[in-house]
Length: 166
Image (cartoon, rainbow, N blue to C red; front, side, top):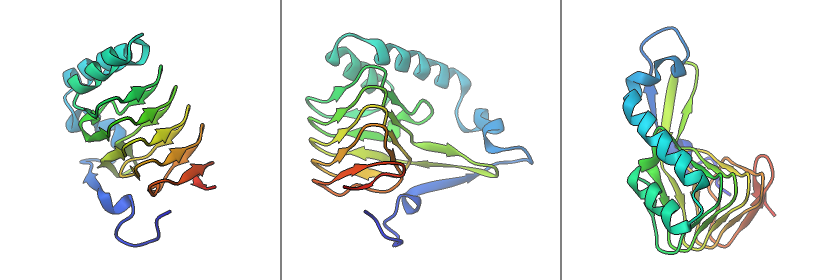
């Protein structure tokens, strides 16, 4: 896993200050146009239940997700609704049932955005959550129900909350 160097997920996120005294989620309409979020949300809902992998991948591409060849996107899996264009899923990766890939985090005084990359032939297990700025290396495996707060090196298996190498 990563150390405290500048190559951590936090170093790959961008902080955006919010304009007033409320928590940053209160200002989400300043970050993304509500109609764009509604459109994206509708396509995310369709992708979550579509019976076809081809259709799911097509829908993900329409909202800006970079989807490689042969990607398997599981039923009920959810890409980031606000910034799906920050997600890259490389060829032959698997994103399992009900997994969530987040590219944003709303905090009290700011919100952060960051890319999420799932490497070639990597696997994100069912119910796992991947936080903004995380890179999952080629051939890496994230166990079901894990919380991925740091990068996962290639050909490594991680599990737990927070996910650690096993």
